Image (cartoon, rainbow, N blue to C red; front, side):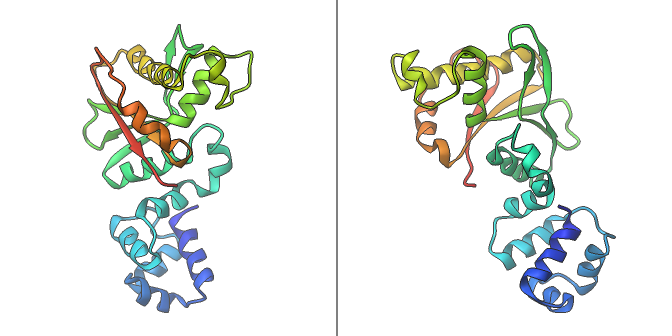
Length: 222
């Protein structure tokens, strides 16, 4: 979806005229018409803030609809929705985003994938890599337990405890970043959501030694 389609759908949903929509959102009538006629193709922070206030929705959720809604079905095969929402938050904070970066790897099936990479605009000598915890779980299982379908309860056949299982997943994710071997990589972000809310406090408690990048744990409410 584009900002143009978003405004058109908002008008249809509310039943307001463009003039009335401009008054209620706080956007100028000319701005609304320029967006509607596709003369404005990028969404500004000012527009997002006014739409957020009017709709009582978080800015990143509105931006998610604008950037990803049309391709949601295909994107969710390779990306967690919580990761995409987090990327919207980064975008709002002046980060450039790249989806599905991959690196050559002997260990990880010859190609090592992350859900996203982000860097501050105009600062290209440092970046962060992003994965969701749910995707890490699935990829970890596919790599090491190919003989069995992924199931959240299957770990009991291979690990002495749930903590041992979660720790192994974390090491798998961190191992990917170590294999990147790039001094410009400064941070690895793991995104959690309501499906794995119980895991985040456990994972935060694990002690990780000899890692030269920052490891961050983010919770996103979908």
